[in-house]
Image 1: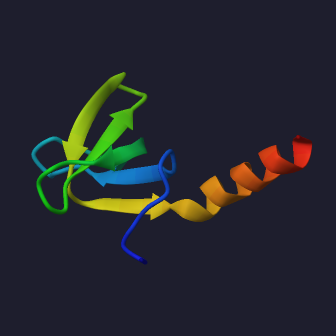
Image 2 (image 1 turned 90 degrees about the horizontal axis):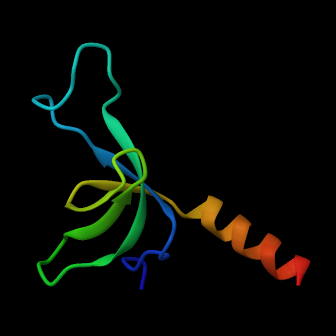
Amino acid sequence: MGHFRIFGSSAYCHVTKDAQKKLESKAELGIFLGYTDIAHNCWVYLPTNQRTVVRRNLKFDEQKAMRVSLERELQL
């Protein structure tokens, strides 16, 4: 079950060298929305562009999502 990810968690998308400009970051912050029908592809919302895209190479920050979820439960 370690391959399932938390919906709504922060996901860092790899930006290809073609799309990068000089001195720009190699990753773009997005929000994980779910999985596609094609294996290894995920839906990600990019707040900077305000659009939803399909990405394959992602790094997840699930610890942050868990902390936020626990804080919400404690407030209720």
